[in-house]
Amino acid sequence: MLRLNCNQTFLSGLEEDMMKGIIGKKIGMTRLFTEDGALIPVTVVKAGPCTIVQKKTVENDGYSAVQIGFEQLASSSATKPYSGHCIKSGKGTFKVLREFKLKNASQLSVGDTLDVNQFEVGDFVDVTGTSIGKGFQGVIKRWNFKGGRASHGSRFHRAPGSIGASATPSHVFKNKKMPGQLGNERVTIQRLQVVRIDTADNLLMIKGAIPGHKNNVVLIKQSIK
Image (cartoon, rainbow, N blue to C red; front, side):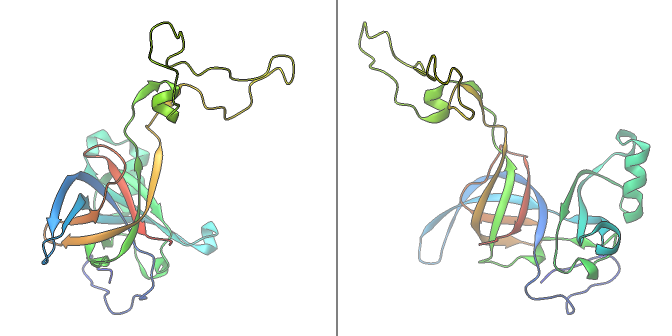
């Protein structure tokens, strides 16, 4: 169930099939052992607490959602319009603002808090983050091309080879696999399982790897599959 901490606790009136969502920060990877000795690799994520900064309604915006903030930002580092946007929550300004379309958005209020208690062990989640950037790379590392022989005199080792016809059609087709930027893009890993929850430190331990480097901000949502 979802716990809201803003002078009131609304645990009984929320829907069982509500869409869960929270913002977190990737701490790193470790491993856990089950009672029968099986080893499970997990990623530790500090998830929340997050504050609801704004509500989107069907009447005003055409859809129902909430905008939540994560991690406090010094007021001296925020612009006046940004501070004015966050001030309604009564919790200061935030480094990260993201929007979630929750099924129970109408029951939530600006200033309420979302934490890890909305998740349960065994839940499946989709995790979205920015993958680690690897800079400009060739076709072998970027697209797993085989390349040419490594023998002396072959004169073809790691080059991409021919990229198109000459006279017809006289151009390179769009989306051709060529050298370029690798990584540093938005990636979503679907259907990862929550293995353990530490409510005292707001930690989620999720089976497997998730995108990004340590301290990377990630979005955790209830799995769509």
